[in-house]
Image 1 (cartoon, rainbow over the protein chains, first blue to last red):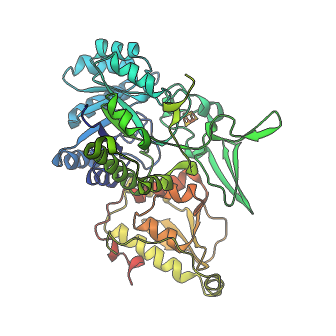
Image 2: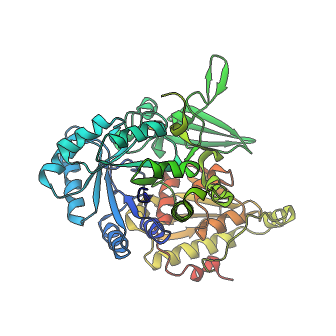
Image 3: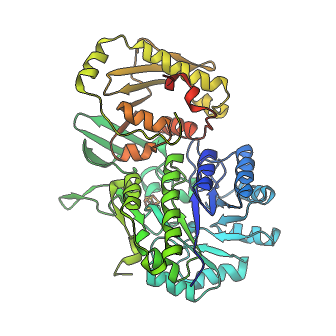
Length: 335
Length: 150
Ligand code: SF4
């Protein structure tokens, strides 16, 4: 039997980090307050002081801190991204999560001792891509995009020594993540360029009697009745008129939830499970971390007799986008 | 209010709202700005983000009490606004229980928003700044804030 996967939890603020640690995260991941990370939202993330305190707190409890510098260095500003790598090494984080091969090269050459992880934004879906990053940059772990079936994840693990991390819970970014430009189509800014999908300054929630409209830079994304759940204002989750029919033409707003297949994830040798949501509040981090910790511990203790408790599902359903949970690509019949 | 106490989702009866609407609205504004200024004094709110709130008009509406608070941030202090001359830059509307769940960090605003229990209208980016600013606060002693007393 493999060791229990690490539980990797999101921290968009110091209180969220402390909450994650207190509720049983093995590692937390976070980012600087700038466009070097893919959750670059106003007011979110860590300045130097809170970073130092966060790392101190996590390390004092024996947990790891992973720092995401997972956007792509923009033309003419490569120095900003390199500086962030320098700062991360300086701070003494346990690993840096990178997506840009140029930055991976920089970090690997300048700091050969520093542990590097390949970000989901790096969009490596095959063992060939992952082994390449190991050979060239000494990458020790890769986070797989949420587009692979469980069988495909297993195939990757069998063919690489690099640790594999997968997503376990959170809002889905359904397209080939790391390659999606939908947001740029609407407003000229995308995760890989400015570090945010559908930046807030382009979003308008328009409340009218009986309904609410969401617009992204003027483009109508969705319209909700008063008793319908709302979702994030991303193009991929909008309802559009396609040949006379209005529906979620790309993907329904759902949350990924792997509680049911946790035993399989353990069996195939996944090294870490990541929770999405650095943009969420400490309350969310507490609820999701607590629930996945309980599930993982129960899997460790009861092995074959593991079963998903209804209370876990209820807790996770409550915080989900769109109030629907899915196994995402993990159990998709097509590839 | 200790961490163990959970706030259930509740809705006050309709007549409370109609009563609330008949009362003068400014006491709510005074209580809310008092609480925010107390947080300011304790240096809980980050200065870089506070600057982004300058001169913005905020409205907090409590649907099931019929209460409403209008306030702004000017020259380093939150100030009640007694008469709005324009639409607020940012407006929140929710039942009392949702606000209490937010303040005690029992629920996440996105959750309440997805479930349509919290309505946010106006400048979305400003809304995000406010949310993230409050999330980043390390409340030393939550029960001591005037808003939650009693
Ligand atoms: S539009 Fe959707 S799929 Fe594309 S980056 Fe945004 S969340 Fe991801």
